[in-house]
Each structure stands twice: as C-alpha cells, then as structure tokens.
Image (cartoon, rainbow, N blue to C red; front, top):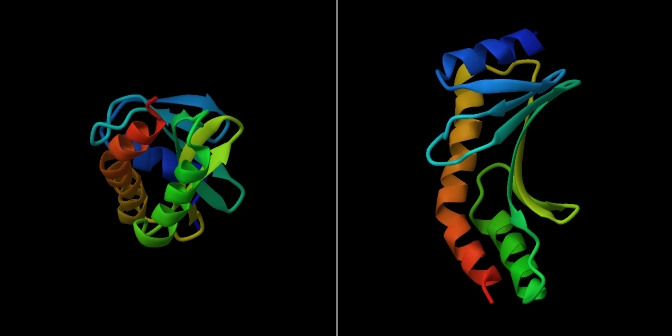
Length: 128
C-alpha cells in the first residue's frame, strides 16, 4: 500500500522544485510543460492533482460552461474541468493504494497537455 511518503518520493523523483503547503498538500513550483502551480493533495485513499486556470468569466458564461462540458466529454482522457468558487479548475484523481511513479507522472503530464492545448481557446472566450 502506498503512502504520503511515496508521493513525496515521487515529487523528489520529478526533479522539480515543490513546496509543502500543508499536511499532504504540495505545490509544484517549477513549470511542468509550461504549467505553473500544479497542486498535489494526498487525502485519505486519493491523490488529487489540480490547477487553477483562470477566473470564471463575467460574460459569455453559458458558451464558456458549454465548452468546458464539451472538453470534459470529448478531449480529456482522465480528469475534468470544473468550477471552485470563482475559479476554473482542472483536476485529476487517482487511487493512492497502488499508485506507481508512472501513473503519478502521467497524471501531471496529462493535465499539462490539456492546459497547453485548451487554455488559449478558453482564455480567448473570456476576452471582451
């Protein structure tokens, strides 16, 4: 069974700077494929990866939400876009119990790839 200490070792193995934000919560400081501030949260039996992308737009909001739902359905292999308060997020969740380094890395790379591909389009939709 994997533990928080295994996740900490995976973070070390990434060879990127990170900080401990709180117990079981880490923030990757260095860019990972041009994405900053990837959070890794070990909570119970889960490891949650998340990135705050932008503020929720104040105009064209229905089209924006529709696009997020379409991306969830068609463009994301794992993970999902969502809303947390006034922030647009992308998250992925894995089971801690049997998590290996390759799965850990794949989740981070998957989020980074989705952000690099989708962010410019989403940002353009928020421009006035």
